[in-house]
Length: 147
Image: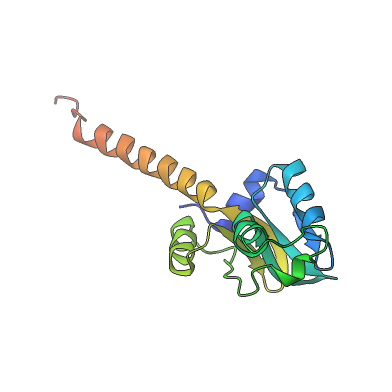
Protein backbone atom coordinates (compact mmCIF):
# COMPACT_ATOMS: atom_id res chain seq x y z
CA UNK A 1 0.00 0.00 0.00
CA UNK A 2 1.40 3.37 -1.00
CA UNK A 3 2.03 6.01 1.60
CA UNK A 4 1.62 9.76 1.16
CA UNK A 5 5.40 10.13 1.52
CA UNK A 6 6.07 7.69 -1.30
CA UNK A 7 3.46 9.35 -3.54
CA UNK A 8 5.09 12.75 -3.06
CA UNK A 9 8.58 11.30 -3.51
CA UNK A 10 7.69 9.19 -6.57
CA UNK A 11 6.09 12.14 -8.32
CA UNK A 12 9.14 14.32 -7.68
CA UNK A 13 6.78 17.23 -7.22
CA UNK A 14 7.89 20.79 -6.95
CA UNK A 15 7.00 22.47 -3.68
CA UNK A 16 4.48 25.05 -4.83
CA UNK A 17 4.44 27.85 -2.29
CA UNK A 18 3.46 31.50 -2.37
CA UNK A 19 4.41 34.13 0.24
CA UNK A 20 1.49 35.22 2.42
CA UNK A 21 1.90 38.88 1.49
CA UNK A 22 1.51 38.18 -2.26
CA UNK A 23 -1.55 39.46 -4.04
CA UNK A 24 -4.25 37.01 -5.05
CA UNK A 25 -3.48 37.97 -8.67
CA UNK A 26 0.15 36.89 -8.22
CA UNK A 27 -0.91 33.62 -6.59
CA UNK A 28 -3.39 32.85 -9.38
CA UNK A 29 -0.80 33.60 -12.08
CA UNK A 30 1.68 31.34 -10.26
CA UNK A 31 -0.91 28.52 -10.02
CA UNK A 32 -1.95 28.93 -13.65
CA UNK A 33 1.62 28.87 -14.96
CA UNK A 34 2.25 25.60 -13.10
CA UNK A 35 -1.17 24.10 -13.83
CA UNK A 36 -1.99 23.43 -10.16
CA UNK A 37 -5.23 23.95 -8.27
CA UNK A 38 -3.74 24.87 -4.91
CA UNK A 39 -0.57 26.21 -3.32
CA UNK A 40 0.83 26.34 0.18
CA UNK A 41 1.04 29.81 1.68
CA UNK A 42 4.20 30.55 3.65
CA UNK A 43 5.42 33.23 5.97
CA UNK A 44 9.16 32.77 5.78
CA UNK A 45 9.79 29.10 6.59
CA UNK A 46 6.43 28.70 8.34
CA UNK A 47 3.35 27.32 6.59
CA UNK A 48 0.38 29.55 7.39
CA UNK A 49 -2.31 28.29 5.02
CA UNK A 50 -3.39 26.94 1.69
CA UNK A 51 -4.89 28.82 -1.24
CA UNK A 52 -7.03 26.92 -3.74
CA UNK A 53 -9.29 27.55 -6.69
CA UNK A 54 -12.21 27.16 -4.28
CA UNK A 55 -10.82 29.98 -2.09
CA UNK A 56 -10.48 32.16 -5.17
CA UNK A 57 -14.08 31.59 -6.22
CA UNK A 58 -15.72 31.81 -2.78
CA UNK A 59 -13.64 34.49 -1.10
CA UNK A 60 -12.55 36.71 -3.97
CA UNK A 61 -14.69 36.41 -7.10
CA UNK A 62 -18.05 35.84 -5.34
CA UNK A 63 -17.30 38.72 -2.96
CA UNK A 64 -16.38 41.08 -5.80
CA UNK A 65 -12.87 41.72 -4.47
CA UNK A 66 -10.02 42.98 -6.61
CA UNK A 67 -7.43 40.16 -6.89
CA UNK A 68 -4.68 42.72 -7.44
CA UNK A 69 -5.50 44.55 -4.20
CA UNK A 70 -6.18 41.61 -1.86
CA UNK A 71 -3.34 39.75 -0.19
CA UNK A 72 -3.57 35.98 -0.31
CA UNK A 73 -3.29 35.84 3.51
CA UNK A 74 -6.70 37.55 3.70
CA UNK A 75 -8.53 34.86 1.72
CA UNK A 76 -6.53 31.65 2.23
CA UNK A 77 -7.70 28.62 4.16
CA UNK A 78 -6.02 28.73 7.54
CA UNK A 79 -7.35 25.54 9.12
CA UNK A 80 -5.39 23.14 6.96
CA UNK A 81 -5.62 19.39 7.46
CA UNK A 82 -2.27 17.73 6.78
CA UNK A 83 -1.09 14.21 6.16
CA UNK A 84 1.98 12.46 7.49
CA UNK A 85 4.47 10.74 5.18
CA UNK A 86 3.62 7.37 6.78
CA UNK A 87 -0.15 7.73 6.19
CA UNK A 88 -1.57 5.37 3.58
CA UNK A 89 -3.27 6.82 0.53
CA UNK A 90 -6.54 5.57 2.01
CA UNK A 91 -5.91 7.53 5.21
CA UNK A 92 -5.25 10.58 3.03
CA UNK A 93 -8.58 10.11 1.24
CA UNK A 94 -10.32 9.71 4.59
CA UNK A 95 -8.76 12.92 5.96
CA UNK A 96 -9.86 14.81 2.86
CA UNK A 97 -13.39 13.44 3.07
CA UNK A 98 -13.73 14.42 6.74
CA UNK A 99 -12.30 17.90 6.12
CA UNK A 100 -14.24 18.37 2.86
CA UNK A 101 -11.09 19.39 1.00
CA UNK A 102 -9.36 18.34 -2.21
CA UNK A 103 -5.73 19.09 -1.39
CA UNK A 104 -3.62 17.65 1.41
CA UNK A 105 -0.19 18.97 2.37
CA UNK A 106 2.20 16.24 3.47
CA UNK A 107 4.26 17.37 6.46
CA UNK A 108 7.08 15.72 8.34
CA UNK A 109 7.04 17.64 11.58
CA UNK A 110 6.94 21.23 10.33
CA UNK A 111 8.72 20.43 7.06
CA UNK A 112 6.57 20.61 3.92
CA UNK A 113 7.23 17.60 1.68
CA UNK A 114 4.58 18.13 -0.96
CA UNK A 115 0.93 18.54 -1.77
CA UNK A 116 -1.33 15.73 -2.97
CA UNK A 117 -4.73 16.18 -4.56
CA UNK A 118 -7.77 13.98 -4.24
CA UNK A 119 -7.23 13.05 -7.90
CA UNK A 120 -3.69 11.86 -7.11
CA UNK A 121 -4.94 9.62 -4.33
CA UNK A 122 -7.88 8.25 -6.31
CA UNK A 123 -5.52 7.30 -9.16
CA UNK A 124 -3.35 5.38 -6.69
CA UNK A 125 -6.48 3.73 -5.30
CA UNK A 126 -7.64 2.66 -8.77
CA UNK A 127 -4.18 1.24 -9.58
CA UNK A 128 -4.09 -0.72 -6.33
CA UNK A 129 -7.62 -2.04 -6.80
CA UNK A 130 -6.77 -3.13 -10.37
CA UNK A 131 -3.73 -5.03 -9.06
CA UNK A 132 -5.86 -6.71 -6.36
CA UNK A 133 -8.39 -7.72 -9.00
CA UNK A 134 -5.64 -9.13 -11.22
CA UNK A 135 -4.26 -11.18 -8.32
CA UNK A 136 -7.72 -12.49 -7.37
CA UNK A 137 -8.43 -13.50 -10.97
CA UNK A 138 -5.11 -15.32 -11.13
CA UNK A 139 -5.92 -17.12 -7.88
CA UNK A 140 -9.44 -18.07 -8.94
CA UNK A 141 -8.35 -19.34 -12.36
CA UNK A 142 -5.23 -21.12 -11.15
CA UNK A 143 -5.12 -24.73 -12.22
CA UNK A 144 -2.57 -26.72 -10.24
CA UNK A 145 -0.31 -29.03 -12.20
CA UNK A 146 -1.60 -32.58 -12.25
CA UNK A 147 0.28 -35.11 -10.27
